[in-house]
Length: 405
Length: 199
Image 1 (cartoon, helix red, strand yellow):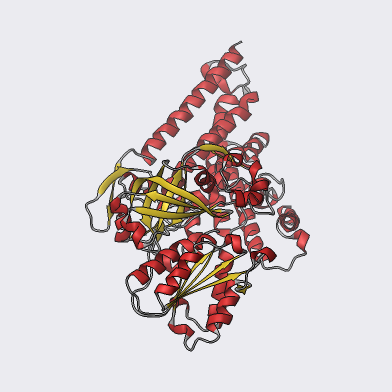
Image 2: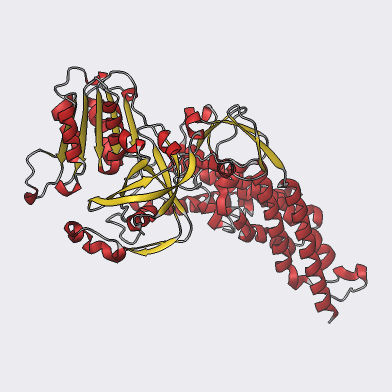
């Protein structure tokens, strides 16, 4: 009996002693202290010891783009930390180049506040803010791309530059794809997708480029192109895209939590010839840039090369054809890689990078003197970079907005 | 004393002679820098827990240890596993706090394997061997630090070899874990050679 009692007393005392020691250690190592953060040369604000910088900035309404939600995988929440260089986190090593790390670049989601910190952010990001947009109208452009027009606060649309993007947040949801209203002409493409289901238990944020023309922006409208992210063919069991699935369900009048505008994909000023190459929803920032430059009366030749698979995947074509009529310096070329016999397609066929090489680079006297803007699937960007490199275009003349699909 | 240190580091190497803590050994040996960090963490945890456990064992658990409060007939040594694990868990949590505070990059790189040191059999094995071999507290200090160094030495050498091996032209099926097992075996064979030195 004394043995059992002694054992119990011993264990209880030991556990209590160890817990007390840990509590004391925690108090000393993770104190609940204020930490001052200074952004650029503004007045510092206070945050708590141990919070991550991304969250601390968000609490101050400084919204850095973070498509991954702070997991360290998207590499968008870049900040420059002034002062001594801190050892980079593994995620930062993967996302930032050696040169960037030497300049003190960090990912805000990876920094825990422990001491007063001074960071530098582009002034443009400080202009971004959180807002709520109302869905004005939606329509299907292709079987898997939906256009959503958002009514946004005027100060947001006024600060949008062509090429920028907004982050949209989807609330937790559980939606079956059988509830999506699909126009009759695409019902065949959708037959197989009806069984899919998107289940999300926490808010998710993704970035979408703004396709608005200057006229759209003056009316306070953000035009967004949403491509439904489907599981890759070799892994059909993966869930469909969390935010895109939700955006395919939203109806007119719905309110969407957003922040922006973000991003530094921009048209260069000046009179260099502009060549824009896009595929899929890569259309969005390029459309904004083309309209903005033509609207500003840019004098230089501008050509837009767009790659799609078949006639159904091509959208806004009439709009760009109309532009070529009003602006003699604008040229619009489409290449279909896999046209159907009943598409009645008589234009270029094959991949867009081949079309660009055959139809532009080969006969151009000075391909290295143009500015190139690429936006589309990573494979397309890689292929176009290849032909540009062959044509002797220096990397500094190529601007691209690379998003996952 | 030197024999104990020598045995702890080389002949009785926990990883390569007893194959203890092999899960972490295989999982955290992809990069030399991470392995080095984990190695140091294990040395510290082992260097603290073994002496602390030795003290607890000598003063509280061993048969007759409680005679100082007048209970000489009580033997609590059957409680040693739960007590040792408790001490190890507390130490690892402290280690986690320290790393998160002072070496956050290493803390991130070790990820879940840091808390898993709690149930790393090399750590518990170190304490249990200490009891089994009846080391006195001073010897326990040497054994604790030594066995930690031995395990760290093994994982650091292993990680260095694996970093090299990434560039080796190995048959398809042996790349990755297959090759790692072969290397572990060869290293173990090498370490058994130290047995001859000890005689």
